[in-house]
Length: 107
Image (cartoon, rainbow, N blue to C red; front, side):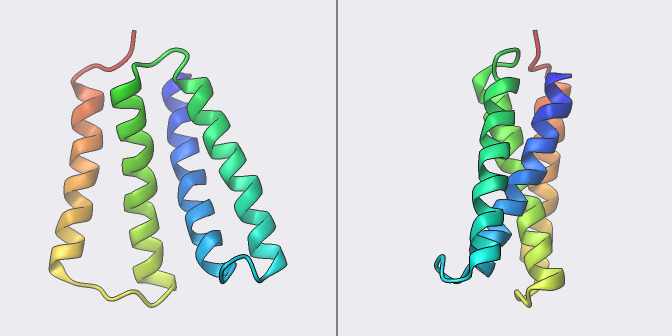
């Protein structure tokens, strides 16, 4: 269950990162409020998952999911440039997250 919460928290991390971008420096109310809610949920889920998971793999998985998903959202919906290097880098992040899970990070 801790891994599921951690993965969902990684998705929330991507949500708050995108909301932060869309808030335009906290000058837009709805994205700013979304940022606060998503960030709180993301950190709460990370904290809860870390009660059962080691800190290193948990934090790496959380940030890896958030970073990879945020990069994809940026390229697909927000007009960020797409390049082979970016796509390969995202694949490497995902491979690292999978590798940490396969290496056994739980108790």
